[in-house]
Image 1 (cartoon, one colour):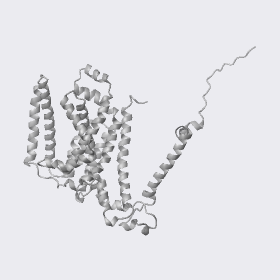
Image 2: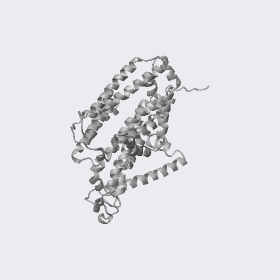
Image 3: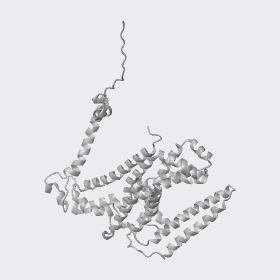
Image 4: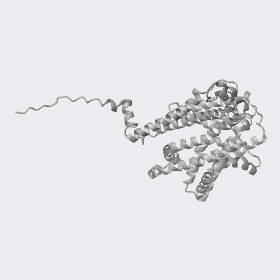
Amino acid sequence: MTTSFVRSELVTPDAPPASLVGPVGWVRKNLFSSIPNAVLTLVGAYIAYKLVWSFVDFTIVRAVWTGADREACLDAKVGWAVGACWPFIWAKFGQFMYGFYPVEFRWRVNLTYIIAILLLVPLLIPKVPYKALNAVLFFGAFPILAFTLLYGGSIINPWLSVIGWLAVMFAVVLLVAYVLSVIEKKPVAPYLNYGAGILAVGVSCMLLVRTGLFAEPTMPIVETRQWGGLLVTLVVATVGIVAALPIGVALALGRRSKLPMIRFLSVALIEVVRGVPLITVLFFATYLLPLFLERSPDALLRVLVGVSIFSGAYMAETIRGGLQAIPKGQFEGAQALGLNYPRMMGLIVLPQALKLVIPGIVNAFIGLFKDTTLVSIVAIFDLLGGLRAGFTDPQWASPVTLYTGFAFAGIIYFSFCYFMSRYSIFVENRLNTGRRR
């Protein structure tokens, strides 16, 4: 006689071993899963420890925090091997932040920073409503308001100039569209009528500016050669970043255009700009461009234009990579829905392409932010230019002044670049739900 046993209830699964879960399990799996991995972990930990400790030891442990001059940062006076000389930073902080901007008008710079933060922070938080209005205020109204606050002078003339230039550019686009429609033997008369009217508005605005009717300054003018420090760094980086994306989109679409002239001009601009370093562009904008113009624009404005075109050319290639990654079916689907070219690109193709190349776009932005240090070569004092000017002050000349200044600049640059990197990861994770693995 045989006896059978049938279990009447499920067996409760045993808990995994303590060595495979929790922090211990993560460490074993990711850091010490094999002998080579363990060796690399130990070597990497040792290098990281040496680097971090050297930085902390110099900037905090052996640092001097108070003092009135270089005497406070000399080893013989302090009694130990001095690290960072932070009194030098405190004494020159205004110069590093504002350059040679007049002290009595620095409230205008601070007000510009506050307005920028109040507009930028809601724009970066997805849950905050009224994104369209916020974007219009930040990208449209804020640049004019910031220029008025920082530069001073008339309030009306900058608006008239912007309206005039925008109207002229829009009118040129309409007139080119009309010429193309004539070439295709399908003339669209509204293009010509609206283009001529908008061109008249733009020219009128420019003539009003030239007449000087609204040139009466409402605030004292602060010339851009008096700007400097972090202010110039942020102005150059912000303008370059904001302008690079639309320029890059336009050039990328132009490079893929079926119209030979538009494609040729886009390719020529991209390849010429990418064929020279940024320093060459800055030298051309600063020293050669005035030779070809009857009335040369401001030096900082020429640099901003050069940086925008340079960054836009690189951005165009990044965006072109995203456009080429879009499957052909997306174009055909949009055309099957009856969408014209602007709607197809604006609603279907470009959003997907930009989402695919977010890391490349942010990489270009971070590179541009760091490249702003090159403007000091053309006699525009950014943050590093202000630091170098501070090093020449004999009152603070000490063996550690130079290293303290570069450590301070490194902290600032790392903070901005790290924030951009982390925010790009956040945006990428938020938008990339369909491809997340």
